[in-house]
Structures are given as structure tokens and as C-alpha cells.
Image (cartoon, rainbow, N blue to C red; front, side, top):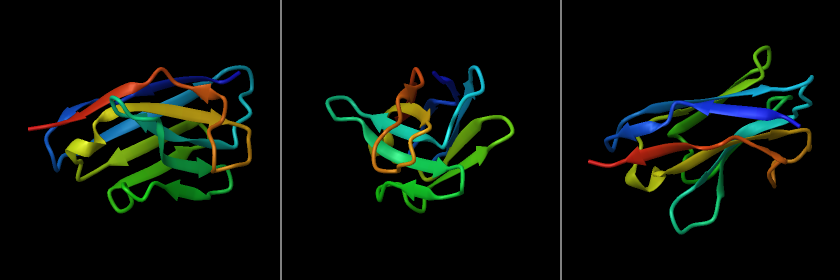
Length: 120
């Protein structure tokens, strides 16, 4: 089992930026995909962005051109740079990681979540 710890959430005005980080730990974590999902109040959890060990990246259409995902393989970490934030980006952001070779559904390991709030 992979243990994931997120950091970097907070409150920001529309148009602002935030950077999320997630670090994986555990006994020799077996990770192929790392990335982010989010869940807004009253809505289902949705994909934000994922990155694979071999460099494949997937973004939700709603964040393309505004968010950038990156990964530090030596640190078992993944980052999400969020620019031009909008109120509709407000949600709890969850780190997700695991060995499944897929970008179409989550892996089994989740972080505790970090709140991102975008408002005036």
C-alpha cells in the first residue's frame, strides 16, 4: 500500500495560482501513475490530471492550458501547478497513485485531500 501526503492547498482570488504537491512513501512503493482528482461539494470526484512513469500525461478538458502536472521520480512526488484559477476550480483535491497501467480510472491509493478555494 502506498501512503500519499498532499500539501499546498489554500484560498486564492480568481486568476491566482497555487501549487499542490504529493509525496508517496511506503515499502518500495510500486507506482506507475500519479496524479490528481478533485471533488466539489455535491459533485462526483473527477479526474484533474495524471502522469505515468513513461511520461504520458492526461488533463481534464476544463484545466487544459491552465494546470501543469509534473513528477519527480527520485522523490516519488507529483506536483500540480494551477494558474488562472477560477471559482469552479474550488474543490478538495486528492492525490492518487498506484501500479495500474491505466489513465482511465483511479488507482487504489489516495491522499487525505487538500482544499482549494477560489473566490473574491
